[in-house]
Image (cartoon, rainbow, N blue to C red; front, side):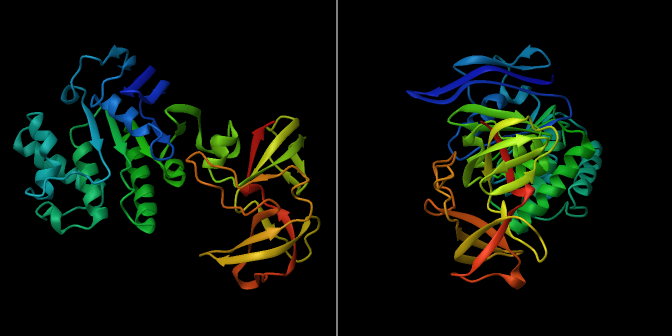
Length: 364
């Protein structure tokens, strides 16, 4: 393993920001630290960078303890939310900064700057002032600057969170492609699970300074280790269920959950898209009354009242990992979706079926 974090704890006075974290990142791997604000993920990244000194535990690179290695000698690249570019330097001057610190000769600097700007989609921007760039372009320059000296590890602290959603989504895809093409080993901090799942080979979910689950994105998404993880990843309700032969059965109906799901009692996490209005000719499902509807970009979000839902043991509206309440309404109501062109109105009765893509399977 390239990076090893063993039992790291970071305290600020009486506050424990990171508590006994064990973590590893392999060569060429991108690992995302995912969690709500204040969970300790940025503190852990700063400890890896050498900007915070752990109170307990150790951080190693290729087996070497980094405790006495200063920040500038760790050869790690850093990218923060605001980019932290030098406003008095042009684009080329910013990208070449780390190369100058490494003593790279001027001709080599120019070649590497041109190469990196091509990689981040800013070819020909060498002489542009960074203050004239858009937010997305500035973050591309910050990435190029961090990658220029061939860092052993790239540390990304909420690098896209200051951008609007559409730009953030596009840059996440571009950044994922860039990291793969360059074979960069990276540790990413984010509160956005879409961003984490787009960029990372593995995801580590944090809460209150501790790691709750580490796994591949599909595994964490489909099989949250705890209800706290499921709530943070968008599950607004949880219902008792039973799995047999890859099919989960609950008070809301049946759905395929994969042959790898173990047979026996379980709990079914419901995201906002877990229930949808049944199509014409589609059998099965449950009957519900529409309480509210809200138009989204690609579908209509419904709040529905399901008779007997409270008696079925469904828990909704519980606190998520960040302390925020779930989006489902009072006990007896659930989220559902409908097509934009044929959405029912409040008061209408609808038939709902489970959509496997909106489900998460939790242990009993």
